[in-house]
Length: 340
Image (cartoon, rainbow, N blue to C red; front, side, top):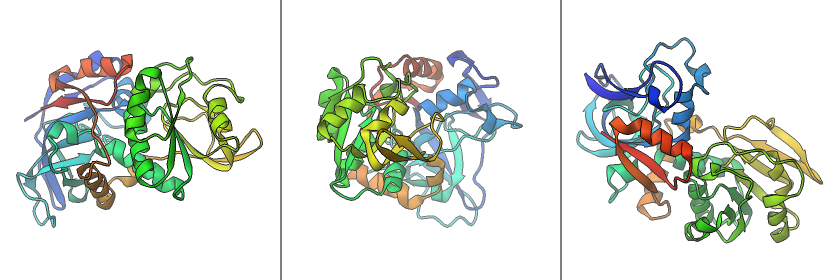
């Protein structure tokens, strides 16, 4: 048996409990990771609360959250072709859509192509903050396909995903504009933002939690107006990691792109803003599940210092409920990481 953190019913943080589950073993084409660290993400709180219950319809509990893990390979399935070796430090993204399939567990079995060596010089806790948010940021930039010199606005730049977008955008040769509260301005500039505009005061601390904020009334006001003051024609693209919503469309130029995250207020395709049309896209990180090349790219960028792991706190796995409470309370900069 192995120790895991899971739930049988959806609800608040207190539904999370320590449980003993059957120890999984690697089959053909698979490896098993002895998990030492698992990052806590907003996607985990959505699974726990039942907001994403539809993806688990018909699947019996227990449900184990967790999309980011780091640890060591401790088992390689028969006939598996891989360059990974038993005892090697690794990191991986997990898609917790089956029974007991998430990363909050001592052992996780994955296809070998989903796992890559951890960045040299990083411990398990730091490595665990990279895979899912790093891949989401990379997927976003790949889909935006902006030419060097283009202007990318990142809303929620103090959050984990927003911070990675700032860093990767700057590395790609983009001019990155970010919003920030006064206390976070130095942080987002250090991450690589060229210009910083004040965050809307009406927002909650959603940027730090990567959770939805109140959608402002449409129109040129707040952050959109401040962005237009710097770029009168609008920015080439805007990544709304804080889920501020439709009020940001007017910050984007005619023909530009608005990237949303876990937000269904806007349809896909093209929508109108003031003076033109904007393409709306929704990056969906499972599209990069199993993309060894992309996960290796994240690993390499971390080794080069382009991506900076951001650990807000470390807690033993038994305190997962407390980790969820802290994340949902706001004010977290980086990721809380559970250790096993």
